[in-house]
Image (tube, rainbow, N blue to C red):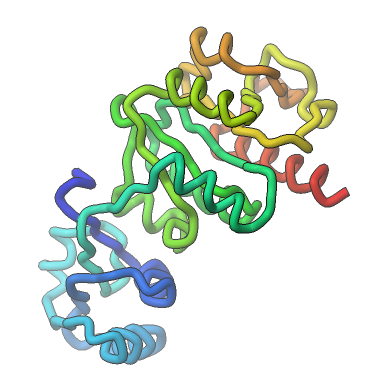
Length: 245
C-alpha cells in the first residue's frame, strides 16, 4: 500500500489500539453479522468518538486486507514525524535521546516487529529512508500490535545526511553489525541512535563508516546472523538494561 494514499488498519487488536490512541479514522468497516467479543468494543469506542461505521461483506474486506478478522479501519495518509519531533520527545521526558535508524528494511513484518520492540523499550522515535525501504503499510500496522500509534516515525531523504545532523546534536551513532565488538561491552549510556541494517545488505559501507561504534551480537551456532527485528530487539534491551543500572 502507498502510505501517501491513506492507511488501512486491519485486525481487531490493531483497530482497538488506534481507537485507544485517539488516532483519527475516516471510517471503520465491520463484517456483516459480526457482533461478538472485541467487535462490541470497537463499536462502542467508535460511536463514542463519532467515527462512521459501515457493515460490509467479507468479500469486501478481503479486497482491502488479508488478515482483517472482520474489521478494517481506514485512516488518513500517514503523518510522519520530523527529527525535531523525535528529539523533542526525548527532551520532554528529560531523557538522553534513544533513536532507532533503519537502513533499507524492506520486510513489513520486520518493520512492524521493530516498531513494537522500540516502543516497548522506550525509544523516542524511529527514522526510515524515503526510498528503498518499506513505509507504513497495513501489514506494518498489524505487526506492530498498535505500537505504531505511540512512537514517532520520521521518513528522511538521506540516512547518511541525517546521521551527520544527529551528530551535530551530540547524538552518538551506534551500528549493529557482525564486525564490531560484543554489544554487551558497548556503552549505551549516552545520547544515541542505533542503526539497524537491511535484511540482506546490512548497514552498508557508507553508514558503517559514519558510526561512532559498531555493536556485534555474538553467534554460536551455524547461522551467521539474526533476523533484523530480533537483532534490533536484543540491542535495544541492552540499552534499557544499561540505562536502568
